[in-house]
Length: 228
Length: 405
Image (cartoon, rainbow over the protein chains, first blue to last red):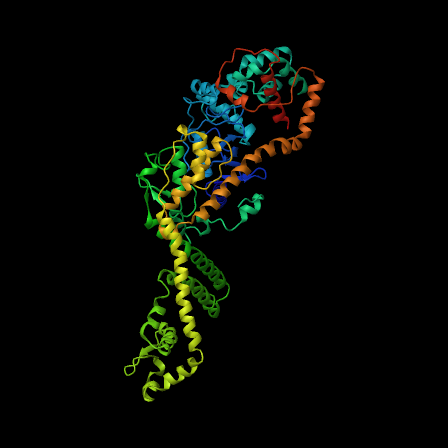
């Protein structure tokens, strides 16, 4: 069984190496052929365009009869991807897995998941709420994350893709929203006397959003702010 | 085989896949053909192919493993059951032939590409033929041999000693070699077969010349030739028996029934294993998975055509390898977790310990990874947890250390 698994993984890696057209890469992370690093480019015409996304791949013992375990290493702002852990909510990684799927086809599915989010079956409730309430604001944040974490192009926040033309007045608020933060929280720490940009930077790093807030004590934030 | 160095393993050539063939622009259809003869589950050439009710084809063992996870075809999700498997001898035949042809085709392609490149550099017609001929003769001969295996070899020898004199037999033997080259004819007078080139001389000498020549040559070796013929006959019979015995043994095998383990006691499962001469060591789950695996292996073997079936000893060897692999894979993560991981992350641990000491009662160095992902789904943004709850503390440490590192 293990031997068959090894042989199959080998073929899949070779298959990816030989196929230049798909732009999907698979590399070894450590000395185990069952712990891999997949990567692909963000799909065009989405907020993820231009970014390069890395995925941690763990191949279970009973592969291919059990699904591969995948999670994003690169932070992604997406309703079906946890903004904290990178966990992915995708049916084929769970009960819809089939042994005829391959690492390549699964990574391609992830790529297309970035094109078409499923906010009704969210992994990250906060992001999904953001997506449902304000698409343009969500896309700004996703683009910002792509730039910061995935090496995408710098978002032109003044004119974000022509989606919100001529709204210079909300540019200040945007900075907070784009980082995926709540304005009230930023204001709260700014009131203590820290620079606004610093506050945004630290809160973004701490992932000070949604349910996570309850886990991050104020002291911790202040401590980080003092260090910054 | 378990190889530890993944790089070496990636370069190893014993693992074949469709990309061994050039893309369809260079050799149309070959890559697709190789792919079509491969099981979509294990991506190897089909072993004991079976067809599900939906028409999709898999290796018997792969399909058995999959259906024990989920009773549906992995390609189209139509319902499927082991009881409705149908063997696919046509596919098996195609795969057997392709296994023979594959290395030959690959070599011919390589040479064709080589030729094209050398031809473009400088045209040397003399070299064009030379590499071709050995390739052909090399590749044709094994196929001839295998055909020889199919036809029972001793039949020719059996005819000889029946009615003919020993001399005749020997002569026929020697002539049959020339027969193959299509250059011998039967003498219309004496009825012996004579090389075409010598038939006139043979007739001119009243059917003596050739027989004298060959008789003179063979007279000394006739006895040993006779012995050879007999030993060939006996050998053939013996080897035939050797081959037939396991076949008969295999043919007599009937598929093992599936056991419903939930209603069986440990001892009954042990009895089942003992009845198959398998180890009865280990706990209940090990016993069950061992028996399941054996039933799958055994029954999958029966889905091969009788000539290709493996012997019980080979199945047992496979079984033993599987158990070793399982044991190895069960040990591996533990080893990595405790010793390797601790050594690799020593600096990080010490840093965290240092920090924890600096601010007593604030932080602890262990960080459970899963808590972050779990908490995502619970969207309760307005509640702030009590400061100092251990789970939340560790989470924040994880986040910060990730960013800084």
